[in-house]
Image (cartoon, rainbow, N blue to C red; front, side, top):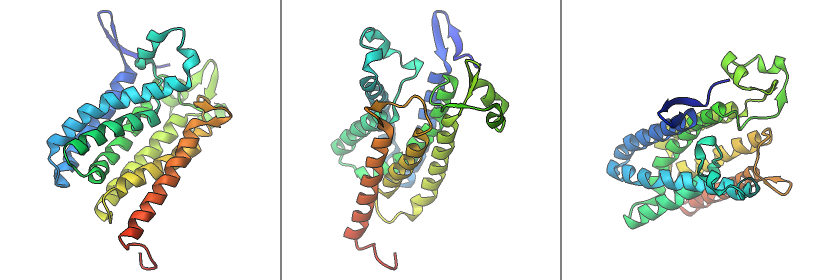
Length: 259
C-alpha cells in the first residue's frame, strides 16, 4: 500500500492527495492560460478566474459531499475541514466553480460561452489527473474482483487495490482514462466548433455519459434514497446539454440534412 503521506514538515503532513490535486489545478490553469491568448482573451483574466474558481470549487465539492453524508460529520464538525482525507464530489465542484466563474465574466463583461469553452478542456484534464488522488486514498473503487481479473492491471495498481485482503475493481482508473479521452476529443473539436459554448456543452455530455456508466460499478456512491446521486445528475446534464446544443444550432440555422 502506498503511504498517503508524501512527506512531513515538522508537525505538518503533506499528503499525496493534496499534491495530486495541486498538480491537476496547475495543469488545467497552464492549458487555459495558453488557449486564452489563442482565443483572443487576455490571459490575465484566466489567472483571475482560476483564483476564484479553485477555492469555490473545493468549497462546493466538499459542501456537496458533506450534504449527502451528513451522518458521518454531524458529531465532529471540525472533520468537515479535513479535505485531505478525500470526500470531494466533482459535481459540487462544478457547481461552485461555475458560479464563481459566471460572476467574474458577468462583472467583466466577457463572453460566458467563450470562457466556458476555454476552461472545459482544462477541467476535464484536471479531473483525469485528480482521480489518481482517489487511487492513493484507496477510494472511488468498485466491488471485489478476482485475482485473475486484477492481474490484467499493472502491479502497482494491483497492490493498491488490495484492501483488507481483497482486490477491488479500479474504477478510478476507468474514469481517469475516460476523462483523458474526452480531453483529447475537446482539444480536437475546438477549432471545428460552430458556435461558442459547444466545447463546454460537449464536456458536460461526454463526461456525464462516462460517469453514469462507471458510477454503477462503484461502492462509495452518494445516495438519494435508492438512487445514485451522480447518475441522476449525469442524466440531467446529458439531457440538458444535448437540448441546449441542438437548440443553439437550430436557432442559428445550423441543423438540417446537410449539417
